Length: 388
Image 1 (spheres, rainbow, N blue to C red):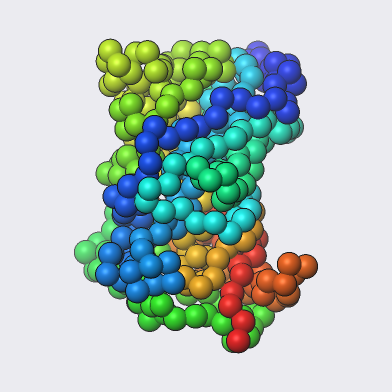
Image 2: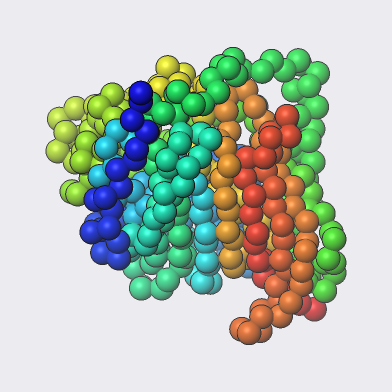
């Protein structure tokens, strides 16, 4: 009989104790921001077009709020992945964000303070006993301004139980006709036109009503190529692109031997960087190689939880416009984006208020699903809008 226990006994000694910070090696460049929005399928011109950005309230190219996670060296999940869980693997479970006002620009040097928070073990249909572990990230610029706080949730589970219990039937990408693909491009451009129509204008709090539906946003069909493009937009995936952690040991975290590898190893990176590149070897390769996706209980190659979080923040931030901002978002990820699928985003205004800081806030209920109606993510968010 298969042993179905998950040993989380080592985790307690790590809770509340700061871990090595994520640190950029050099100041950000505008092309880092451009690479990010291109990879996240977010054609908001204030983030990549010089002339348009110069005419904005920012006066120059500004990073989207989602970009903070790209300045970390582990998708923001590092403080939610500490302690030994033998024979385990990890996927993303959700992110809660608080934004404190300052924005990120080219020339900024960002650093991240990280503290493991807590964990709980629950029984799931996906992999039996499963650990939901949380940790906090606080992103600062060189001036010490707190830009954002991210509370990341990781899902740590036994890959062998996921293979045993999971459904690996949908191993082939769905097929799309040329007509369907052309229709999808029209749907995508409809959302892009919304960005263009708002331009440098203001979406006023006074003109938004409870029950209003936000425009639908579509991404996809996803592919190994699109997931690879996303991966390369995270600065830590660049050879010697960030200051590496010295306390990161995949084997010590309990990753299964076939997936542990030496991803982000600062010593081996200088000798043979392909051995430390998570796209090829190590726990991240399940995203890009169907064989390794199935090994961790997924039917085929799948996308990144941190990218899903970015899609959500960009969706909300694009609707808010340059005079608005997301102030809080709490996202739960129910399942990843798979190759061949599309991602459909919708949201509805469920409340309006003026908070204790005097900010005009719109509350929204968000849902992300695929073409089959399968829910991939849900979120509740608060967006600050200008008031007349």
